Length: 498
Image (cartoon, rainbow, N blue to C red):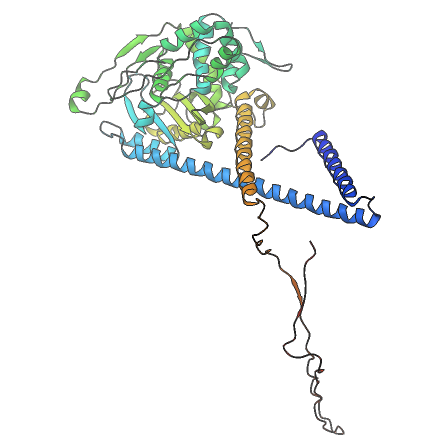
C-alpha cells in the first residue's frame, strides 16, 4: 500500500488546493468582468468541491485497481515458477537416491518453488536432490549464508577476538555467537571490512565457492565470485553476498566441511552397481582452518536454530546447527537455509533454497526442520546438546538485533510501493487516452445516469363495508378520472443534480 502522508505533506496539499480554488474563482470573475456575488461564490465553491471529491474518488479507485493488478501479476509469476519447479522435479533422475529421504524432502517442500539437497556430511554421499535443475545447474545469491565465510575469515585473520564484542548500537554489544544467531548485518559488515576483499575471496574459494563440487552429474554450474570491491560495497558483500552465485550443492559441501572438521568432500550419487561397489569418501582438500575456529562457529549456528533467525528448524529431539539467508536476488526473493544435524554425531546435511514470497518468512528453515523431524527415527540421536538455550518469547534483544528481518520487511514495502506506482501510472495513462475530447461534429455518448421518475398514484378502491342488522346496502363508490388526465399522458421526470 502507498505510504501514508505526513502532517506536513497534508498541510502542503491543503494549501495547494486552496490556491488552485482561489485562482479558479479569480479566473471566473475576470471572465464575467465583475466580482462574483455571494450566491455565485457559494455555487462555485460547491462545484469545485464536488469536482475535487470526484477526482479523489477516481484516484482512489485507480490506486485500488493498480494494487489488485500488481497482486494478480505477482501471483501469476509465482504460479508459473511453482509449475516450472514441479516440472523439473518430475524430470529428476531417481536412480541411486534414497526413496525414504526423497519422500520426506518432497513432502516438506510441497507446492513451492525451491530445491532441497540432503547428504551425508561425513562421507559426501547424496541421499536425495529434489529439483536437480536448480540444485546443480543454477546459481543463487547466498544472502546471509555468506556470513559463514565472513565468520571463518574473521577468526582465521584474528579480526574476531575470543573476548571482544562489537558495539552495534547504544544499547547492545555483540559477539560472534549472537551475530550469527540473529544474522546481524552490522557486525559482519564491520568484520568483512577489516578482513579485506582479497582475504574474503581466498576463504570463499577455500570453502568451495566459485568452483564445481565434482559430483557425478552432468552440466554442474561452478557458481560465480564477485569482482573487486572496496568501501561500503565490500562491507555489504560480506553480509549480503552481493555478486556471489552459489548452488545448493556447494552450500551442502561447505556446511558438511564445517560438520566433519574441515574436510571438503566430493559429493556423489551411487546410481549403478559398479558405482555402489566403488563408492568411497573422496577428499577434495583439507581446509586450512583450525579446529578451534570451527568450534567457535558452532554456538552461533545452534543459536540461530534454537532462538534466532532459523528457529523454524528447531527439533526438540536433537540439536540442529544452521544459518539462514533472505534477500532479493535475480529479481525475486531468495530464501536459503544450510544446516547439519545431529550436533553430537552429524549424519545429515540439509540445504533448502526457495524463491518467491515464502522466502521472506524463513520458509526454507521450516522445510529443513520438517525433514529432520521426519527422519529423526532413522538418522537422529537421543543425545541432545543444547549449546545455546531457547530464548523466551518476545525477546527484546532478538527484535533489536535481527536486522535481516527488518531489511526484508523494508525491501518488501519498497517493491510493493514501486509496483503499485507503476500500475497507477499505466492506469492513469489509459484513463487520459479514454477521456480525450470529443470533436464538435461528433455527438457525445449518453450519460450512464439513473433519473428519478415521479409515478402517479392511482386511487385505491374503497374497502367494502360490513352489512349489519340496521345497515342498508349502498352501491360502491367509483372514482372518476378527470378529463384532463388521459391514460397515455406523459410522465414527469426529474434529472439528478450533478
